[in-house]
Length: 289
Image: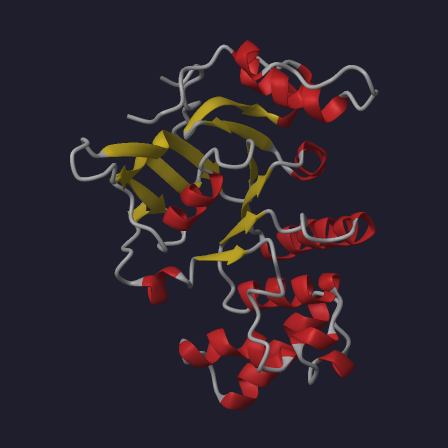
C-alpha cells in the first residue's frame, strides 16, 4: 500500500488532470507447464493535478513512470482505473479528440520527428489533421509558434538532421503546443541534451507555461531539474506513489525511506560515500506475482 495517500483537493480547486486508482498489469508467460505470472507496472495510482500546476513525477528507471504517461495520453489502456481531464473520463478509442487537450514532449526529439519533413511541415501536421483554420491560417500559426519557441525563420525549411539537439526539442515543443492543449506530459524532455541546453529548454517551458496557462506533468529521474521546475512532487517506486507533497516538503523534509534514498544518491557526490542501500528504503517487495 502507499505510505502517503493522495492529498485531497479542496472543493473549490480546479482539477485539470485526475488519475483514479490506475492499475496496469502485464502478463508473463513462463513456459508450457508453469503458471503465468504478472508484473504490476502501475499499482493503484491516484493523483490530482490542478490547472496551471506543474507536478513532478520522480523515480528510478523501471518504476512505471513512462507506463503511466502512456495511459494518460491514451496510448495504453489501463487494466483498471480511470483518467479524467477537466472532470471527463478520457476515451482511448478517440485519441484525435484527446490530442486537443493533452500532448506529449518526449525524451529524444530526434526519434520523435519525421526526418523526411521540414520543420514547418512537422509543426503544421497537427493543424492539418484536425482541420484547424485555412491553409494560410495554419502557416501563420506555425510561424508564430516557431517564433515563440525561439526558432528563427531560416530554420523553418530545414530538416531535423540539420538541427542541434536543443533546436529539435524546440520543434517538438512547438508541435505539441500548436493545437493549444491545456496539459503537457513532459517525459524526460531534457535528459538527452547537454547541461547548458537543458537550462534553456527548462526556462522556455517555464515561459510557455506562463504564456498559455499550461498544466505540466513533468516526469524525470533528475531531481535537480525537478526542483527547478515543479510546484509539487510525487515519488514513484515499484509502480506506486509512495510520497506526495510540495517541492519544499519533499526536498527539505522527505518522509519516506525511498525518497530519502533518492535525495541522498543525488546530493552526495563526494567519493567514498557510496550509494545508499536500496534495502534501507523500507519498501515492499517488487510487485511481481
